Image (cartoon, rainbow, N blue to C red; front, side, top):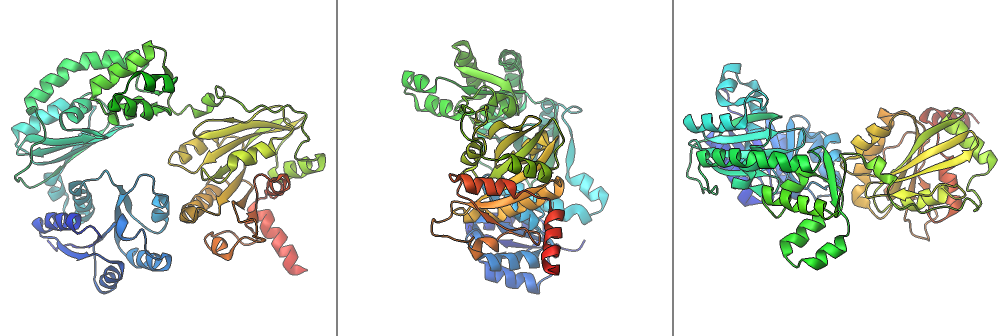
Length: 517
């Protein structure tokens, strides 16, 4: 079998050396680099099968050099690892050609096995079957898998992915020595995963080695204890309404005053926003059963609010609305309303959806309040959305949603896609680090839902008379589509942005007419 060749670009030499040692155990040739110029040189002069790039090694690199590296790297598969979950560049990396983005939750062994799996795609099928074992939890329960791996004295990582969770169990010579699921570790993590009955798993082998055993109970002890607590776990989950629910605390201030315990305060703070029950369990300072008992106590004391998962839209109805009297002069005149209706191509008696998207700091909430002036409906807000219904004419109203550019964006857009008639994208001039990601989102949403749209830049310096060239160059916009300026507290600016919503075809048509003249 031909030897594979891998390039690793990593600033953290300790972690990269561990990764190199794992590859060398499998006789895989590794080129190791700690800086971008050296890596780019190796990339240009060597035939590679895979490139691994550590996030911290490129995060502060010059944009032009980084794009050049990615352009060269696209000739083969490249993976970026140790990427923070909130990194605004995550999706932009995919656009630049990354095969996969691996978060900071991936251990070195996980990165290695993911890489080996990519390299193994050229191996004979029989060799792959001998090296891995995968299946569904519906067909192989986890207790049975752990029991069999113990008998077979297997060494490796068992990775499990359910519809809502993910976890890893590490085996050495059949014994579990480490496990993780969210912030749960070792015994607590295994006991939690033993409650899972749906999802997929894959076992990737590791060579047997000397390990630091972090798990207190034996395999048999874990299975017995897991069976003991299963009935109580099921009862508590049912009492909370099921795993499909999201929860958050109310009366947070009173709860924090009652108990000075740091773990309890941390627990209450984590529940200040709605979170899924499995997410609470995985990120709690307590073990699984103590976490559930704490939640039950909060529910019984009427300090816990419960809703269906992803039901962020219904929750808007419960938020405190900032009511409008309806007596303030409307932002749009009757002629403006007719122009907007024509631009959006809305039908009579329609109540279609207009989405206003931007970073948390772009001013979308204030933009919506200005647009909403004179309407009888107030603007409702929660942690993820702003919403109002604006009555523009007797037979024409718009449901206006303000949405932050965040990880759940695609899910929220999908829920709102029916009767969607337009987008307004707001770009915060002060968030240069988000331009690339915002550009990626704009181009993907416009391609996915071909509705009229416009784009404006907010938070510009008061002295700015035009959008700076540096901002313009960061956005790959169709010909004829301009970046507008917008002070969200200025009614006339907001009006101009709203009325600038047009389809790309119309923009191109206007540009052609101008050029003929």
